[in-house]
Amino acid sequence: MPDTFRDNEERNRFELEVDGTIAFVTYRKSPEAITLVHTEVPPELGGRGIGSRLGRATLDAVRTQARALTVECDFIRGFIKKNPEYKDLLAQGEDALAEAAATYKASCFCGAVEVEVTGKPVFAGYCHCRDCQEWSAAPINAFSLWKSDDVRITRGAADVGTFHRTDNSYRKFCKICGGHVMADHPRMRLTDVYANLLKGYTHQPTLHANYGSKMVTIRDGLPKYRDLPAELGGSGEMLPD
Image (cartoon, rainbow, N blue to C red; front, side):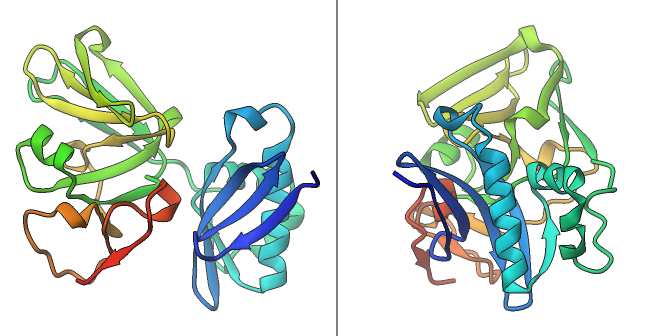
């Protein structure tokens, strides 16, 4: 089966299908500009150079679309650094390649556990799912989803407890004070470090997730997803503001 590359606008991502499995780069797009957000290559495609092929095809597609490019994805940023012939695609003033990655720290209620994140969150917003409501004893969770490789426990690893109701989310807490710290989402390869715990971090929400199970109505103009955006494996179905 030949490899297939396409711009899947319904799911807001460029896709490279190899042997029936899809690697992709998610994006945000307007008529004049495009931001490359996140690259994902399934494990079964690892070690075959698929990421580089996807990166090159993606940037070639951006060139044909004549859109100004900004880059939030670390993989694409690194790919451009290694392949400077694509630097001319970057929007004027875009300093994504030279920008030093910011570092933020979060800790539990008693301070015994400390977590550090680097870079930018892949997604940031508010979650209204039942699990988050029950776990936090609050109607809404302010989430910031980071690539799991960019999240580190820097203090108190032995004091971190884990609970998972499903294989989608492994919730981490301090065994001393019970303070919630973060939640690993292994299928997405992302980790939610609770936004209100990150010192110096400015939460810039872009969406509401699982709004179909909301306890409170919020009219802030942000997109409201019944479950999750398609990029995160959801239906992508939108609900009224």
